[in-house]
Length: 191
Image (cartoon, rainbow, N blue to C red; front, side, top):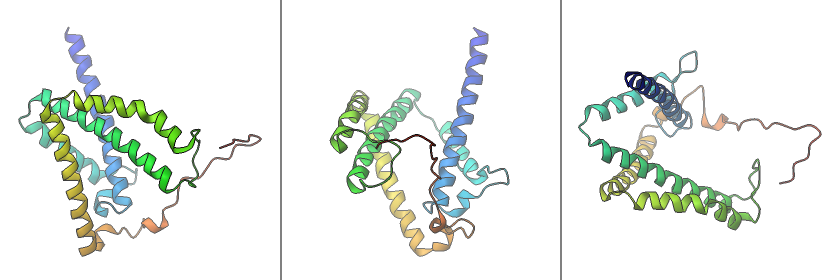
């Protein structure tokens, strides 16, 4: 039993480490695209986004210190995840409608209708996941969406008022280029 507890601790540490790296990289990428102040995107010579790591770690520490009912916290996380999946799917479908000519690595048959049909089970499962949770968790999802919208508006206002905070002279968003495509020799792929 003690070995299981030790294994659980190490598994949690590994999960936290990977989550810290993933979330910090997201914050740094958002800063490099001009969505957050450029200071958040500063990296060490090794490429580690040090400011983003500390910002994310501070947020985690703040959540740990606060007194939460863990059951509700887990439900809130699950509802937020389901909401993100639903939002990503609808944004994906909107992108297919707005920019159908974009080069994509593969095509789903039957256009947007075929794509919607393929993604429908994920939307249904996510919606059921939201519906089966307590009202507190669903309300928390609404609060998170409202807070994200408010944060977006505030950051846009700050970007207009103090654009220097969002401009990184070494990495301009104008100089951003997509990842290079890999050409396959002697193979033809039909879209």
